[in-house]
Image (cartoon, rainbow, N blue to C red; front, side, top):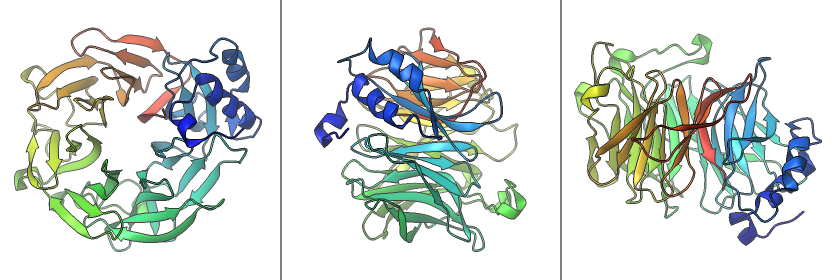
Length: 385
């Protein structure tokens, strides 16, 4: 089945599941019987499809595709633990990244009868778990570790051919790049350099906590030239800047992981713009010291005027207004980490216990839509449509 670009932007649930059904017979996919069951009752219904990495009760890793009711539609097997997922602008393909220091990504094209492609990292590099597409969907930008030189790079992959090809790399002007996104005009790449040096020979050990220098950089997407580089106050040099989301004003909200003393309670969320000094938000007094100094995911709602920041170790998901950075409220979701927008004002939150919670009001109780048995959702979730 072939879809035009226009249809793919607002594809019906029937169309999406039909495409998945064609691939479900491949070894990497399961769940075709569920897809067939849904086809008969959902014709013509526009769907919001979500994707998240998971681990099942048998220790297998994969990507789960979910509908907006929290029901699982299909699974895609992974060779190891997954982390972030990047979705192409036209929604016709997506990439699942290995968790650091993983050496694989998996490219999936659900609307083509093509086996998912595994992309291996270059010698001397490993992936950091995140990436993004170019505005035209032809290129994939993946944050990587040049671990022998202790520097961050962006691997550039050409996806226009049937088999992906690495065509170069860009500097990130920092160490430990964790997340990357493309601005809405498609011209600037934003990278959160976490500042933590690691080497795969030493697993996930952090090698430079005393000299960390996290930053957020803005790069020309065509040339890789440095457009701007921002750091927080030197007192926050151990706040590893990690996950990001764009608000409707084009500013970048970044969640941090503090590597200093556990008795300190630094701000964990900061807002960056290319030509402005960064600003930090204030943790509300009722939650001060209760977030375990860790923000796991950051997401904007569909309109870009509310930001959700999950703190899985503290069991809280916090919500902020883009106007003035005002705190709107928090939801107590144990081990809740993956966050994705459902519509203009609501979010879906996944957790490590398999739960999928719907949040429409930061001050009202969330609704658990589903809890698939034996599933542990990983850190991140994305809206596919």
